[in-house]
Structures are given as C-alpha cells and as structure tokens.
Image 1 (cartoon, rainbow, N blue to C red):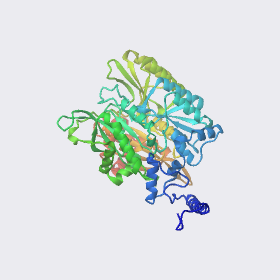
Image 2 (tube, rainbow, N blue to C red):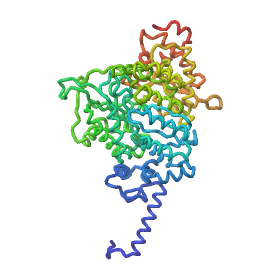
Image 3 (cartoon, one colour):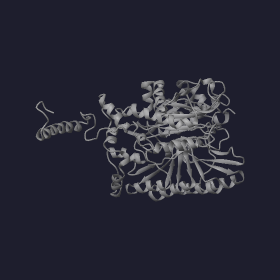
Image 4 (spheres, rainbow, N blue to C red):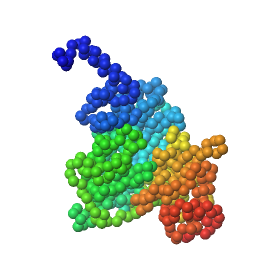
Length: 598
C-alpha cells in the first residue's frame, strides 16, 4: 500500500518488475532470494525439514552448496519422467543431474566408464536365491555380466547403458529390491550381523531391526533430505564383525548386569559419528536402548542431523562435524527431545564383557546355533562374481541350504543352513563354479574398492592390483593368522584403509616426467568388535605400485621374525613407533619363512 492508498494495477506491475529484476540478478550470482527462499521456488512447506534447514542456513548468511541448490530446484524423487525420457534418448545425466540421479540408485561413473553403476539397497546383507538369480539376469542382460559385493554388505551392477537405466530399476523393484536413496544425501543400506539368527555366540538376532529401519526410511520422505550421506549398522554380538564403529550410528548389542537400575538383559549401546575416512570411530555417550526403541532413536537422531547439519560446506556435512561442533552431549540431548522420553544411561561397569569376534569366521565352514546345520563362508576374489556364478550360488543355496545368501562387509558371502550331510556336495558345487570356502590369510583379508576401471575418483586399479599382491605374497610369506590388506583408490576410503592391518591409499606417484599408479601405505588399523580398534598410521608415502608387493613382503617377513609368540600383526605394529617399524621393515625378507615364530 502507498501513502495515498492501495497500489493501482500499473504500480503493482512496476513493483513486480523491479522485484523480478532484483531476484534475477541474485539468481545469476548464485545468491539466495532476498525474500526468504531461493529464486523461483515456493515458500518452504511446514512439513519439509530440508527446505526449512536450507532457509535457516541462508538466513544466517550462508550460501548453499551446489548440491543443496540442486535438491531445492527439483526434488530428486520426482524425476522419473525426466529421467526416463533422457534414457530413452540414450542420454546420461549432466551437471547436477548426475548427483540427483543417485537418489534413484544409479551413478553415472564417467570418465572411468560411459555407463551407469546401480547400487542396490539390501537390508542386513540378506538376499534370497530368487533375488540373486534375478540380479544375475539383470547384470547379464543389461550390465557388464558381473556383480560386485561391497564393503557395506551390498551389491552393485556395473556397465549399464543409458537406455537400460529404467529397466534395471523396474526389474529390481519386481524382485522386491527398492533402491531409492541408495546414493546421494540419504541413509545407505542398513547393515547388520551377517550370521544373525544362526550364530551360537550372538546376543540378539538383528534381522528384524535391519528390516524395520529399512522400511521406516523408505516410507518417510523427509528422511531423504539429509545434508550428506548417513550410515547405520546393527551389531548383534556374533562371530563376524559388521564394523558398526565406522558408521554414523552404530547400535552395539550388550548384556546388562543386574543392579544398575535397568532390568538385566540385552540392550543396544548407541554410538555416534563414525567416519574412518576422516579419522574417527563412532563413540558412545552412555545411552542404552531396548531393541524396540532403536528405530525411534535412529529416526530422532536423523531429524536432528537434518535440522542442524552443514549445508554450506560439503566437506563438513557429515554427522562427525556436527558432533565436533556441538559435542556428543548436546547432540544426544537434542535427539532425546525428539525421542520423547529420557534416554537410559548406564555406567560402563553395568555391561558384561562381550566375546571377541573372529576375524576369519567369514571364510570356511562353521556350525550354526541350529543343531546339525552349518554356514559356508565363500571366498570371492575382491568381491566380484560373474553372473553365471551368482546364478550358481543361488542354485546351491536352494539345493543345500534355505535359499538364503548373506553378504558381509568383507566383500564375500555366506550360504547358511546347510545340513552336515550335505557339506561335501555343497563345497564340490562351489568348486565347480570356480569358487571355494578356503583362502590364505592374505587372500581371506583382501578388500578392494572399485578402482579406476569403474570410479572417476580412484587413482589406481585397486581390484587388479589387490589380486596381483595376493599372487605375489602367497608363495613367499606363510602367515599363521589373519592380516587384512585394504586397498582404496582415493580419500573417500570406500575400502576403509584406516581399519586394515595394512591400508593402501591410491595415489599418483611422480616418476621422472610421468605420473604412475602407487599407494600411501598405512599400518595397524582395526575395529572394536575384534578388540583392535585403531586408526592406521601412515608409514610409507607415494610408493610406486611395482614396489608395493615387495614392500609388503618385507613388512610381513619382519613381523614374523620379530613378533612375540602368538602376537598378531595389529598388536605388533601398535607396539612400536613408526620409526622403529621402518627400521624393522627395511630388513631383507631373508629366511623369514624358516625362522618365524610358531
């Protein structure tokens, strides 16, 4: 209204033009709207916490990163028609649409490949034989003819043409595999103990919890509005580690003693902020939950992260950095408010000691809690299986087991519920597929990310070089205990090099005027479930790959020569400073095979 009364139509049009001009200039400069929302976008809905969080960030003077602006401009979950039309025309996404398409579970991996990678979303690592056959068919007909097992007990299909993108997704949906939110700023697939429900040592079966949280996420659209990706894991206390302490939220099963204000029994300790690629494990705050409270607690923590995570700096947008800024106690207090009731707090002496996990229980034959039944841990070369092998594994699971295949974070799988009388036949069936259930200590602990054959970030061919390392070391160093070697191609640390006994981080190494593939080498990493939680320390930098196998041979030979009886590589490395290790590792391998400790 003007001083002389309401604006007439001419005045209104003039003012609208002025406002439009101002907003156009701000939009061109990438600035937020002067009127509380980004240019051209509707006002924030009261039920859209992502948009409200974005508005708070801009109101405080921050500038949204490109990914936040892209999510605001068009909801990634509402792009099916646009996505399908592009694929029908044989077009891959460009610009920020590459990021938005990850919400559908499809990753355009150029320049490594002019193709999509499809990440599935399997809760608890469980896949049925029917689903495995379907996945094999998709990989064979629409992909590269192989499937990769990931370090989140999940599967990936690669080498998918643009035209096949929608068909891959719809065929997965037909199999009951809904992978919406498998990438980008979402909660990743929920991981759980791979031997859940069959493990003689477990405290609790985590399968129902993984399933319930999986479906809770799928059915709450607001949980797709995170500032960055988010990992959640349930550890039921069984034989095989799930690396829950590397997750943003880890739920760790514990048994509570009598006399501490809570009924004795099994609870979950909630741990927060794991991200080993940034040098941090998840930490507890003394909060213990009944199993039935875990989903509600996870949802509350996610909503606090949505409201307060950083949307102006992509490098600081993970939960760890909000915890660094606030402290665990403040974050837990805010989560408690949304949880709607006081959290249960218990002292550490209320908790019974847990059995240490077996680092090699994912390879071999092991008895189940069900009398006369066994699971077979199948060794997979760096997690890759051909489509015909995947189909064959499904057949073996039906013939000799219960039709269930269980993936592990160690990039292999288990066939469960095999009667003792059928073990020989099942193992013979694996051999016929070119697979087995035994491996050397080196090969059993070998973990590798996709590498530069399928990922634009990777500096090295991790999978091929991992196999070359195993081929070199096996005839030269006879290990009598587990030694994990993790190869990751870049700083994103998808293969979690910081928690390996030996971690290899891909790098370009200068050699004359050229840059060749090589690695920074780390030692002494480990995870809590095995009683070895530690971030690996760098010992060698920029080692050309041609020198890596012999360097590892020297390291392992020196360990065998100088260790105390029964001492594991992890403990050996952490008993010495880096300079001492360098001195020991500089020794020639010599006769290490003959004079190693018993």
